[in-house]
Length: 116
Image (cartoon, rainbow, N blue to C red):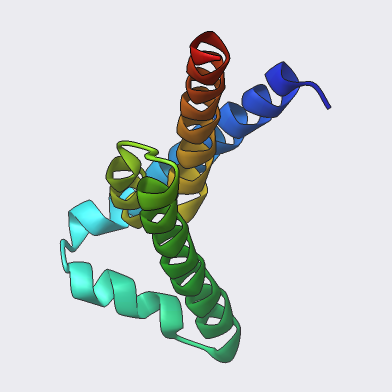
């Protein structure tokens, strides 16, 4: 897969999820702006509890990865991706982080070649 196809898939996935989130979640949230209730509604049965727990753990893994690469590879602005991983969701935060990371690693490699 080429890099441009990879990036296009990430952008399409993030935009799709954001639109789906806006259409599905925002109208009932505007009717009843209970954020804690909206969060708890993701755990109403064993199936939704499993999926919700998976999403929360994926965010924790993303946060660990962002923190590690900020220190190890000086990837900047990962915190923005973590915020977007909360709202609208991990799909958006993760996709954005991969795009941000790819750009910064490419710049890092280019600077390393110039320094050689």
